[in-house]
Length: 370
Image 1 (cartoon, rainbow, N blue to C red):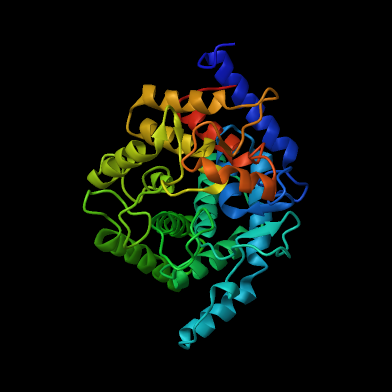
Image 2 (cartoon, rainbow, N blue to C red; image 1 turned 180 degrees about the vertical axis):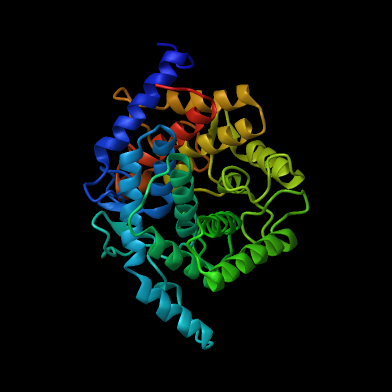
């Protein structure tokens, strides 16, 4: 079957829905990867939110609602922890990264016992954004959402400007522009739900304005593109999310145009996209989900043929059983570093449910149906 045919694309859409549905936990959580040694048994808010968005676009309402109810329970249960963190911060007390909310959870919603890089703010913003997208699209009612939206919005309104790990669980001492973009989108979404009271809405709006001002002042490099983190002139493929879907800048804004172009120039190769130039994880291969983000940005700018090229590259990476991996290792930025990760954690994570979720998002944007 020709990879770029309508039939082949439709089959991968169908297979992606099947893979995600099959591995969704009875709790509602989406595991990052059911087989990969370091991810097995855990769910991330960020990964799960993008997986959920893909499934929501594919019309899988019940499963996506179950995921959001799992998130609402997980986040709502940490209301007391957030209240304590806010109280301490208001009193001028320093709060360490180790005391912040978790990045990943067990499928039952508990804190993990394995050591991890565990302070990331982007997941909470991404969940708020995805929740609003799903409920608006389908009119779904998510149990526990009111409490959880308040908890997540309060958490982000207070701590949005604190350094934390980035999407890749690196550089905890930096403020990452893609993280700021996720928080910006999440707080805008939270305000739009109407679930926040007047004080919470005011705090969220002030944080949104603070992010806008900070990124304009310190988040744009001399070349006009967004920075990987404040103070760096490097780019990272996660910056694509700041344009689409998070809308920190609209697709036709000069900063958005420059960011997409620079990420593509530095990090794209024949349809696949690397994370960043210094990447050494599994040798720094091309990530399937990042091809999805690049394709979505081309689609948002009206460049359908370019977007299709990324969709078809994603589909071409599927295994014989139709599973999409986290990354592929044929073109590596640091080939000498591949073996150490293979020995440490085994083969590249497959299937990565986030890869399938991004295929669904891009396929929907291009009106590819199963």
